[in-house]
Image (spheres, rainbow, N blue to C red):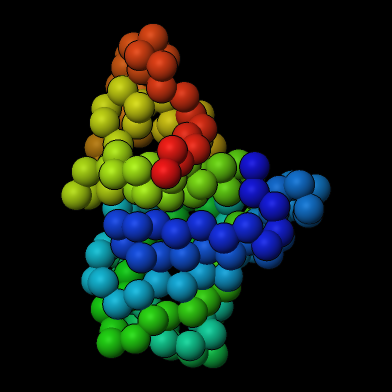
Length: 182
């Protein structure tokens, strides 16, 4: 579980997150993160947060946001509110780092998801698309189905696969929380 002041780095994308408010410090109301995304052009998969509002305030630099299929560039001083269940993704296609504040309301357990994926990245356990193997991914995504879901394939196919493969993942020793060994 993250604490205010903890910092994590995604080795694959170079993104860093500094936790300002966490689940425990806000009584579950807010996850507030100071983020830096370097200009990699790496696009995360389109996803939704089924029960969370996601807000971004750009401090410096710029990022491209795709929300409901509509792309827009947000620069310093701009903000965007992404309601729950809204398909979106973002990336930095600029020439400099983008600094921004990101918020999730309510916090739920999304910080644990970020910590796990950033640790998997650090240990080289993600493929070129940033995804763990099927068994481990099923364990993680089943646990975080209330925080984040990719938009393709359809949700009913995803949840079916997670329930099918997660038990094999558990038998192989995979858990929904991963701590880096490096």
